[in-house]
Structure formats: structure tokens, C-alpha cells
Length: 267
Image 1 (cartoon, one colour):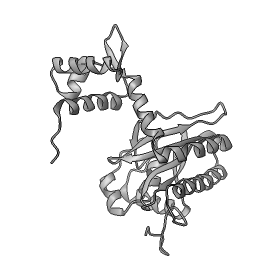
Image 2: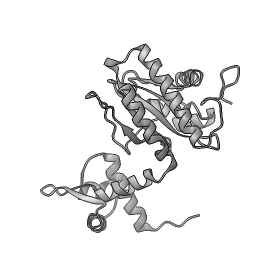
Image 3: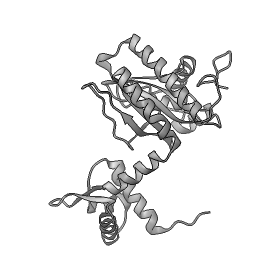
Image 4: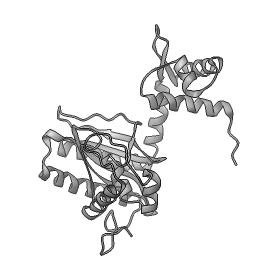
């Protein structure tokens, strides 16, 4: 068993706390969130601020937000990965060609994490905060990945029971989700029909690596008011082709993204 360094663990927990709250926090809020003494929190905050990993958001309220240095570290990780290097130019082409936001995400501990986005040149755009998390079952990217997983893994991630709705259109039952994932496998891409945001429709497909495991997902996000059935089909076909292109550049040799048998089950 790996022995944790207490100071390092607290530092990471502090950064994750501010990221998860998606808002600047006071020292008291940090203490409460981490359940640590004020003196310990103060030392951590001061050190991280001096190193550029935290910044003072409001001098009067003494609130702290994530700093530029942390962003620079994250960008270095992304630009150093084969996935980002391969996917980025394809995402740019997709966004420009279809006038929809191109998104890249992956699963982390049962949640969907947004890794990158490219907005179209048009003035109408959808915004996603990079690094933010969302449920797998209510997002296009998340459902695209779930469709590539075994039933056992899907049940482990979702709990296999009632699903927390994000909007009035969200799938809330496990059995209904499984049916939807079968549809995703059959057509080759997932559809999030306002399930995570009432104003947005997204279509997505899984990305595979050389081991034939789904490691990420590529998707479009478009405004519901500007999207009809024909556009969904067009976006779905394009995102499927793009995800397969990225997958092949990562070493995938399959002929399609979701390998299913004659009964429509994942193989």
C-alpha cells in the first residue's frame, strides 16, 4: 500500500475543492471543506498563492481562485498527449465546417471530464468549462463512452438504479439508459437531447486506442433551437467518421466504433 504524504495530499485536496466548487472560496470555506485547522489552511493557501497555483480573487473578501500556473500545467499535459495532438486539428475542422462546438472528454472515476473544446467561427456558440465534470448518463460524451463499456462497468459507474436528472429531459432509469446505449451502438453515435442542458443537443462517439479500449469521446454541441432531425443525422455521421479517424491514428484497427453482434450486443 502506497503511503501518502499528508502535506501533498492536502495540497491536492485544496486545489480539487476549489475546482469542484467552481467559485472563489474564503479561508473559512476552505477550512470547512477540508476539515482542517485555519492555521494549516492559511499556510497552504499562502504557499500556493506565492507559487502561482492560487490567486486572490477579491482582496476585500479574501477569496481565492485557481491560478494561472495550474492552467499552464494542465495545458502542458494536454499538448503533450497524443490524443490532444491528434484530435485538436480535427476538432477545429469539425467546428468550422458544421458551425457547432466540438468537444473532447474522458471518463474519470465515473464522471465525464471536459478536456478540450473548439468553438465555431459563427457568433452562436455553446460554452463548456474545461476541466469541469458532468454525469456520464446525461451527456453525449458520457453516453458515447458508456456504450463502449461492458454492462458490468456501466452498472458500476451509474449504480444500476435511479439516475439523477439534470433537466426534465434526462434519463432517470437504468433500464431506459441501457436501451439508449443499445441505440447508440447500432447507429454509431450517442445523442444527448437536452438531457444535460435544456438549450443544447449533442452528438458524440467514442475514441479507441491501440488496445481497442475506449479512452475518450469526441462530440458536437449545438443549440436545440437551431437543430432538427436532419442536422442531428449529419452531425452524427461526421462525428462518427472523425472519432474513427482519431482512433485509427491512435492505433485502433477496428472497422467501426461499436463492434456489435447480430443481436446488437457489444462484443
